[in-house]
Structures are given as structure tokens and as C-alpha cells.
Image (tube, rainbow, N blue to C red):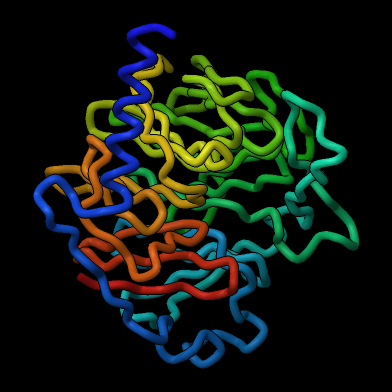
Length: 328
């Protein structure tokens, strides 16, 4: 084992200790939940009863401060103010009706994906809705995992660009296999975690031109069990939630492996704050960029997606069909 690998493991042990106890300063701030968001309940918040949340897979903050909710049901993209008042909704027909399913352990092939797409009667309405992000220009991006495509929309919901080929699974410059998330570099470059079927990160220019990719399936540095989420800091470093390996890996903008935060749980959510001193939510734990825990949510549950409003409120997407709101 090389000295470099030993240092990575050493950092992983440090993060494990911090993640399960107080930060180096001994202070780990707590958040409390604000009940009943939206308030009143969705069906009474100005939306027709048929527009109740299905599985809530993602949540984001729009450029004008609205909370954008992605769910697996009718009108899958919903806009609310921070108090929970319904503004508008759209997206019917945009997402595939397939869903991501797990392959039974007995049928899995070593070194191959443990996931597959399920369509038809086994699917559900807009089940492809997997992740939602808002870029620095206010455009809304959504990931259709079993549709193998990523959409860029303007704030009004008009599709401006597609990455991937809808309905076509692959591992080329222009095809994905069950992608999971999308993130944005300071210079406008776009990263896609192509995670369930493939195990890679693909980088594009702001206008969708392929630049590079990295990753393969495994447990070593630069390898992924399931790259489920990614975010980019102000210095251009890329943070990837490797959910099945229960870690976050950190890379340079060129895909060079820098470090890992090991043994932090199988998180399904990742969010980078926009404050002057950036911090990162890894599931229900807020960390500094050294991986040290600085705050937690009750129960430590970060759901399937997260966002933070301009006033510091934390919103969590739960597949159980609700959005949780937390304040410090």
C-alpha cells in the first residue's frame, strides 16, 4: 500500500470520528423542524387535490427564492414560496414512467451494476424524476434516470437543452445509463453523475459539448459503487456521493482524485451552500470542506435531495411523499 493511499485512509478515519461526534471545536449545531410544510397541506395550498405529492425526489431554490419541488406524480415540478404557498406547477409528460430497480444479490454480476430500469406496469407516473438543481443563471435542470436524459429548462419551464439521448441507454459521450444528478462549475461547465447503470462522472461545456469523463465501478480511489449526487465548490473541486461505498470522494476539475470522506453512511443527498465560507450537506450532516461536522438535522436524515434558502432554511425531499423544512 502506497503512502498516498495511507494518507487517504487516515483522512477517512478522521472524518469517521468527526461524523459520529462533535466537531474539532466541540460545537455541532442542531436544527429543528418546522412542521406542516407546505402549510396548509399540499391539496389545500392552492393546488388541485390530484396534485398531491407523489414520491418527492428532489428540491431546489430558484433564483427568485422560490422552492422548487420535484416529485413523482401529476405536475411533477411544483413551485412554492418559502412559507409553503403554492405558486404554479408544470412537467406532465416530461419524465419517463419507468423507475430504477435493484437486481437481486443472487443475480448480480461482480463488477457490474446492481441496478436496472423497470418500465410498463411496474413503473409509475413520472417515476423517472430523480434530481433537480438550479444553476447560477437561474435555469432549472432535472434528471430523468430511467429516461437516460438530463434536461435544462429556463425558469418558466421551457426545455432549452438535453444531455443524453432520451430512451437510449449507453456509455458514450452522448448517452447515459440511469444518470443520477447534475452539477455546475464556477466557469459554467456541467457535470453529470451517470450512476446507476454506469459508474462515472461526465463533464460538458455550458452549451453541452463533451469534455471528459472519469470513474469505473469499484471501491478504490476514483471508483464508484453508485455516484448518486455531486456538487462543485467555488474552487472547482467536485464532490461526489458514492452512496453504495458510503463515502464522498473529492476530485479536481480534471477528474483527478484528491481525497475521500469515508464511512459517512449511504447518503442520497448532497448540497453545497452559497455562503462566503462554503459548507456541504452530506445527507443530514453539514460539514466544512475538510469534512468536519458542524451541524446536524434531527435524526440525521438528509432524504433524497436537499436545498438551502437564501435565509438559511433547509428543505429536504423525502421519498415518503413530503418536504421537510428545518431552521437553526
